[in-house]
Length: 306
Image 1 (spheres, rainbow, N blue to C red):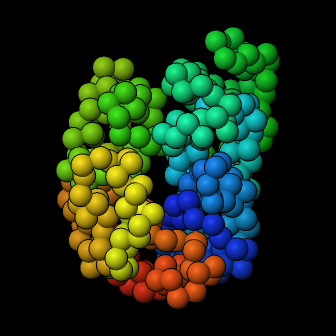
Image 2 (tube, rainbow, N blue to C red; image 1 turned 90 degrees about the vertical axis):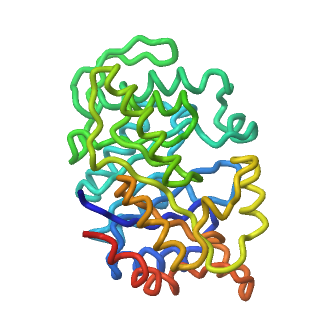
Image 3 (spheres, one colour; image 1 turned 180 degrees about the vertical axis):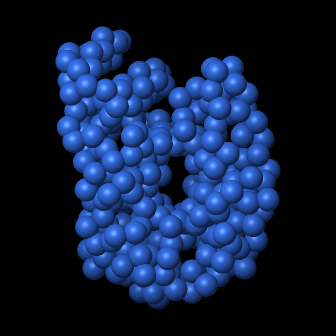
């Protein structure tokens, strides 16, 4: 299986110069991909705009969303945006989608009631795939209606594989029914392996199989002490879980965590430095300066690729 390592920004904010420097460094050092997360109510770049900028500066780097929130978007417009980005980048788009962060402010910002998110997602994703593949698409569902739409341009990939995030049992079953791959976060390798079994069971029940290459993980790491903000986020997401069991400590700890994921069959890995995006704003704060740190990070982890 192909082991590949990408780089994720998490939800940090970036000034224009810092983002451009980071993209150039990732392309030059050989990272497989760049992943942008989505948070309407936080300090995060819009993932599609940011990836479009990255596409224009690169020729090799793949472009991932980790994850793009589907409920709250018009599926025809999103299918068009993603197809355009895939076309203009030469087929480098890696879309990963989900329900959104488990926060009321985020749900409200997208204009979607929490209890409707899953049903909207389940209707929107198959429709987006149809728009990428078919002409003269007709759809009359609970949330969306499409009459005779032929989307142009089609994406280069026919269609792009769509990965899903999430770790809840209902989310794992949805991945088995609808997803092309799984990209969890804030989990241990052993937990990821347990989740994979649930996904594979749901896929088999739906008459589907999952590509053995399509198991990944977002792996957060720190260069120094765990930032208070990240510790609070861990407590909120995983009550009772020791952050050290989920977040790699230092480059040696990160490398060991990546190797453990690979040993559990997860081969598409995205490293996410804690504090990313803050260094240019908070000089001397101990945050990671991504562009300056990419070379050292590449030396520590890219040899894990085969």
